[in-house]
View (cartoon, rainbow, N blue to C red):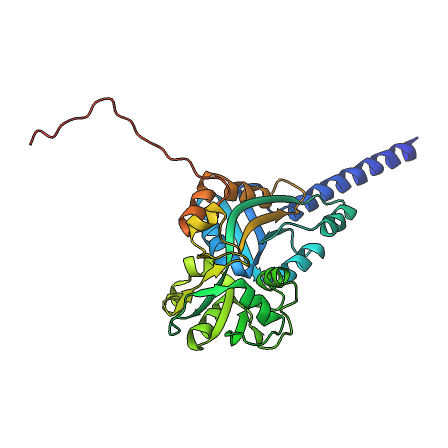
Amino acid sequence: MMNKITKTITGFLLLTLLFVFSCQKNKEDKLDSIIEGKATIYVDESILPIIEDEEAVFETQYKAQLKLVSQSENEVLNALLNDTATIAVLTRTLLPEELKAFQAKKINPKITPFATDAVAFIRSKSVNDSLIALQEVYDFLNGKAGSTIKGLVFDNANSSTVRYISKKAGVSAVGQKNVYSFKTNEEVMKYVAQNDGMIGVIGINWVFQPPLELQETVDKITVLGVKEVGSSEFVFPTQDNLAQGIYPLARDLYIVNCQGYSGLGMGFASFLGGERGQRIILKSGLVPKRVPSRKVMIRNNITKDKN
């Protein structure tokens, strides 16, 4: 009888220890809640400045510490698919086959659009020309003779800007003659500023909100007006033109959350799409997904100045 009781107690203690260990492990695995804790967010390098601004305000408002990892689009996507990353900011949504890969692992990504950005062409201010036709870019990438473009410079062979322009042109920009790539948008801007005839392809946010140490370089480049194929009008990537949908190289920004629980991925996504996050987007020169409200104070009585 005593032996049976001892076995029962031992079994109960083992179950208790397993429960406590499991709870402790879950607690260690989830180092964050919606507005508190630590999390790592992988960010497409071409839109890093705006996410840095959002991060700074989010951290001052909540007890949160976000670590931003800036990489090319392909690297960010690979990190997501390989479970290295659980939160990412991209310039496109996930493709059907990418969603299937997550669903096969019983992960349901939460995808939130929060802004509209633009792919921009830039050149040195020493060149007295601020316009470019997309047809000329496409002809250059297809190897047609007669182009005035000496070279196209991208941030990274695996970047979102390369993918975007390649898709528009109908030919891969990678490996084409006189097409160059560095590692960051910052390097592209510095190179173009110093080399006449070279045209850089960057995220416009790097011009709207450059780091302080890059402002001198920004002052030496010109953002080009772009003419769509079949159009007679050149359009610059201004906030107003992006909002009206008339700039031909506009793209939406998304935060992808694969955490699977109510963590900082959900909190940061809510912040980006919320009132304060959208105001930061608006101030940055990009276009928020929803226009922040304006508070208008109405007074019934106006006191006149007696003097």
